[in-house]
Image (tube, rainbow, N blue to C red; front, side, top):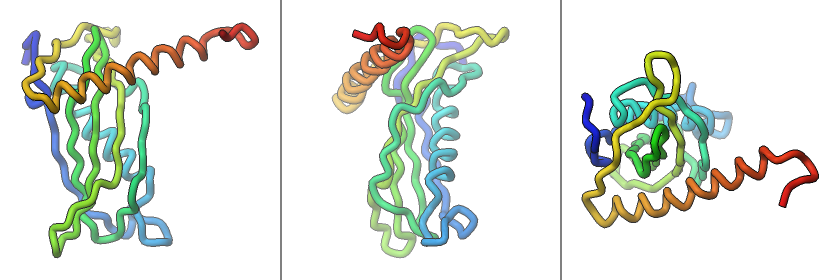
Length: 166
């Protein structure tokens, strides 16, 4: 699909898993690494759907584990594009745990990831623009824009020689 402008809904992904014993630690709660791998998996699907080509994880900005997820809980991951630049995009992933018997849902984790689109030579390449269609998408875009600037500032600070930081 080669479209120059897309909405967040054009590339969003929702996925479900169940926490099995092999996904959990000795306390019966999900390993953070398992949840992180599922987050990266759904996020790259969103990135690929948005740009229509290979995309790679450039950074995982923030993962906040809010509440534990137990063996037997269902895990719902919802991911969409929050922001796009020229060759990179921020994908937001919300992880919800669901009691399979009552249907009660609780937000368990939130994460923000940056992906870069690559051309056939593995060089960063231009991606479609983002068209916002709702107040919620605009809010997510504006929040992501702030995070993008914070990431740039942090990378600039980290790239300065030691002792020469502002």
